[in-house]
Length: 411
Ligand code: NI
Image (cartoon, rainbow, N blue to C red; front, side, top):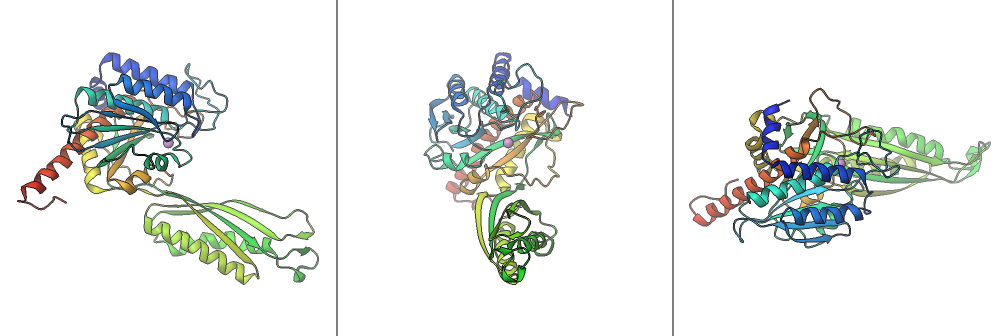
């Protein structure tokens, strides 16, 4: 949509840098690797990060890579930028010359672009540094939800005061950016319920306790959690994704197993879902003379951008692309994103970077035809670099204000 915005992002990089980034993206795309298997990707990104002028470049958390771009002041505020690097078990159908050469594996979520714009941001920050050091994190295993937590168990982000990351999004035109406060991605938790009865002959049900009838009632009852227990204005999902039980038409089995996923945009709603799944499963089981063994696994928390850091991100995007390029999200996104783990520890913001070519398709991520526009590499690079600069300025200003003692800390 905003052609000026794209031109401005593009022009912030030199021609040789743009060529290097486009080539890097194509190379990563051609050799996609699944979560925790990003060996070749990590080796390539390590070289690229060193080439971009980062210091202390090293492998972390298995297949992760981290490096530091020096800021103007050694004691300036330390800010981090994160790009994820893993691919998905999907057979590519884009037909581009640099399509995946790995059967059944594809960069279908744009993480090849995310890794590339982290390198692009490093190039830009080397040329025009932030007030303090910027840590560039190339994170493995976002798709399985374990990479961010693994990075956080290392010392890679020690001393960081704010963190920024983004995702390509073909619902938005290239040049458009979403940088706003509030919920941006849902929590993604899983549950397993074993409904245990007493097996018997299908012809004499009164001699048994039938877990199939109980499980059927439970599937229906679980749907009342969102319908009757959650504020209609708050988004939530309870999905039973698998149900297994029984072995023959005339046998009542001993047990039935159900698994499912829980999604919520707010921590309080997430807690209610967990609580209610347990309550409903136990109560239904009791009503049918059964027992329910419920286990709830915490996956990624919701991504909720805090106000101040989202405001910095908004300002950064507007500085690079112009005010018109920063657009409202306007979407309730029930997908999960493990950037949420960083936001539990540090303030920061997660952005959506438009990736639809003018007149192009809005193919969703995780589709075998998914291909973000090339120019989104330049937009992401420029916006994330500016986020780091803007955040460092903001943190420095707060420090000075606090030191002044004239004004209380700005909220
Ligand atoms: Ni993704």
